[in-house]
Amino acid sequence: MKSTRSKTSFATLPRDYAGLCGVLMPRPIHDRVGWENALEISEAMAGHELTADQEDYFDLLCRLVEDFEQGQAAMESPAVTPLEALQHLLDANDLSGADLARLLGVHRNLGAMILRGERQLTLAHVRTLAHRFCVSADLFLG
Image (cartoon, rainbow, N blue to C red; front, side, top):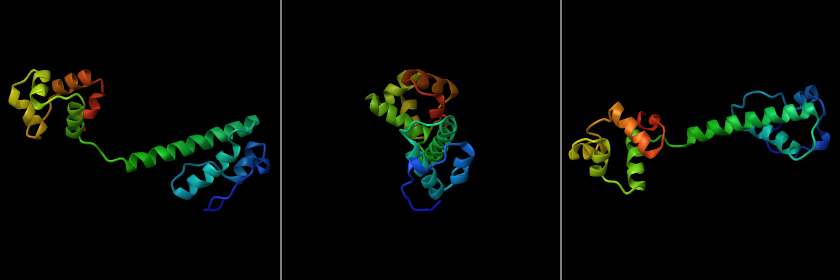
């Protein structure tokens, strides 16, 4: 396969699995060239009536492309700290540090201290926040 996208025609693709593997051996995708090659073949196959072998091959290529794209997206998305996530949830719900303290059932000053990073959330706080905002507790555990 080439590193540049050429248009592969569905009519030129083999109908059996072994023949398709001869065109492009399905394997985990580690780089853009591998992604482009797998995408070229899968795009050529999309929307056509496929044999059982072609269907299996197409399904596998699509999974490999999806896995690679998800991995790329995870690497490109910035990591959010638990404190940033908490601040975002509070802002989205028009809640202040004092509201956070009331929600957690702690002294009013503790809410502001948590938001400044001076105090950490306890496990009980994490459970309360996860329940209140309907999110995974992992969001606050970093």
